[in-house]
Image (cartoon, rainbow, N blue to C red; front, side, top):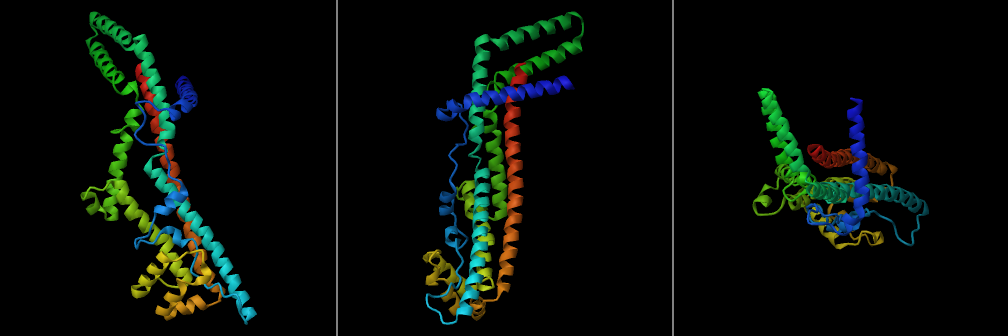
Length: 345
């Protein structure tokens, strides 16, 4: 047991050293065996510019809440100070919520796109290709096959037919594997038709079926595109659109008010809060929304606190899932290369 663990650790150290040695060359000029997934991960700002809710409102429009920040000249100083304090707290909490939620959603999108796999797969594939070339140059596989054939012949001569047939079957299997998958085993995980690609496609189709985008799949769209249009938009509704209405107007807008909210949010600059281009039209179509929006009661902070707690819970769950995914993929890549070397041995 101790010897097996020692060999495993030695193999791990060898693979890690080979990755560090091969990484610069592999990332600078990947060869023909480069992994199917690219390493060009989309930046956070670029991702934000492409995401919308189900109504088509860009997620960047939710950077600030449509709150009443007052006017330049006000006679009621006490009322103005209370409102400024309340709005400042809401703006701070909402800013934290926006940054956390959008960053975590971008992280999930990046992880599920598997573009980051190329950072690790490229040097490992380069190492696997180098080992394959070395094995071909020293003719290791024919030599090992000859030794195995001699061992099988000796077993037959000793009338140990069961052991001989077992050794023959094992030798043939190892030769087949060594001349195919073991030449560059990482490619079988990250290649065009590799395990990772197949798993991503299958998981994407299942997720699309659950999210209700099967019709788009039938029309020729890819699973990742459909997921971007359905799941990401639904998450934006749940984590941005609904909470922004709850905090700013005290309710989830429906009917005409919801349509007014969608139109004004799409057309306005969220950072120009003094213009009230969203708040005033929504107040005009709903008395309850107007009453909540004009209130200076600090009880309005309670929904925002609950929303922040929800975003923290969502972030914790996403980070755990992301960590599990990263560890699983890296372990698959390591053991693919490790098993390839073990087959040659």
